[in-house]
Image (tube, rainbow, N blue to C red; front, side, top):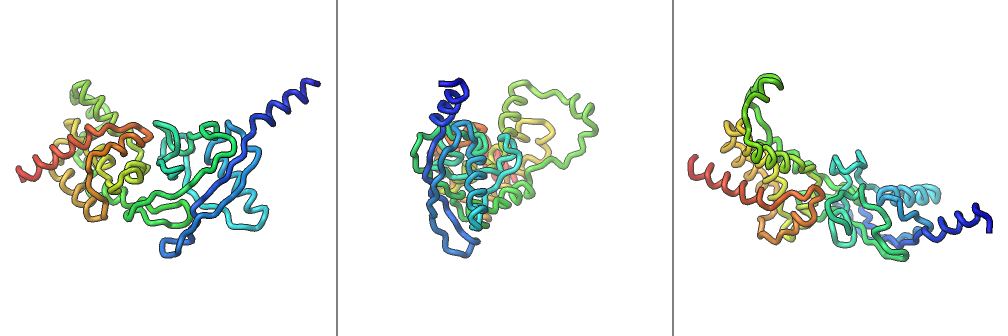
Length: 262
């Protein structure tokens, strides 16, 4: 057997076939349904979004409507690519976003069920795309610092304990993808809000507006229809940035302190 043919046989052996059951829905008011697609000869090194690109190209070639899904950076930074895959936000891997998921995490011949985030505050726009502007509204309610700390050199002269800085940076790693909401049986946004509260609560620059911030953000979260936290831990388990539940405890302390000292 020639080397070229030997290499082609290896490549062929590695390729995988899948059955996809994908949620299709024209808009928020339309009735959705699952549609089944067959994909063959998919490389195990192909990312999940690249696999969907291949599917869409096949649908376009057949003059059928492609599957709509969100994505942007494809580097695990923006959080736009959130999909519910086989009953798990971002699929069967830990500490990654959907765009970082590769087809080698599945078995040849697997049936893969792909759905959008399921939460009332995240209405479906089309197919797998949901409106996550509810998170933006929570941030607009108070997830910011409006105190003028001067230029960067001036801000950096404010001493911050190393432990506090590390906790704040860990909280700031949240990319707002919504996996915590999708994983929670109550569709709670507590982990997201807690991360945004914690990243400022641990820093002196955030203390001036601390009470106002937590009260307004929690109020907006409740107003938008997100559920309550019952400490099941699904949010932390499925978070692509592995944000700790300890931030929820910190937010609760901030909230009760702001309420009783208002």
